[in-house]
Every structure is written in C-alpha cells, then in structure tokens.
Length: 52
Image (cartoon, rainbow, N blue to C red; front, side, top):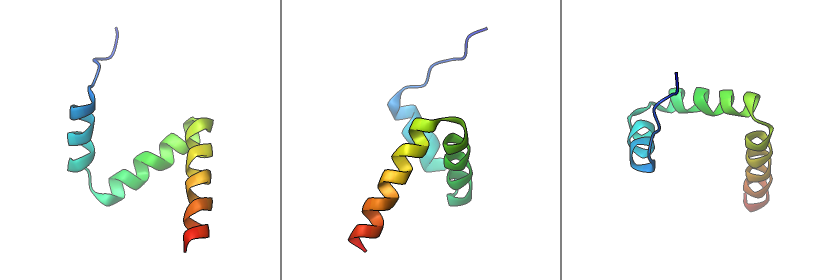
C-alpha cells in the first residue's frame, strides 16, 4: 500500500503545529536516517558558527 502524498502547504501546516521539542526530535531522526540531511545540517552549523 502506498503512502498518501503531502503537498508543501500541508507540510508547512504540519510543521507549524509541532512543538519545538517535536521538531527537534523529527530533525534528529532525519539526520540519523539520511546522510544528505546530516551533511546539510553540518554545513548549516559551520555557517552559523562562522557568523556568531
């Protein structure tokens, strides 16, 4: 059985409704599962540290 597709508007609403703790947990899970997500957040962290 295929999963239903979600559009960008629905995704934005879902994310808006999540608490900060839930968003952190979601992102942590994505970082564990997908190397490209881990790479993305590592790059963001480097830029963030550079700007601070």
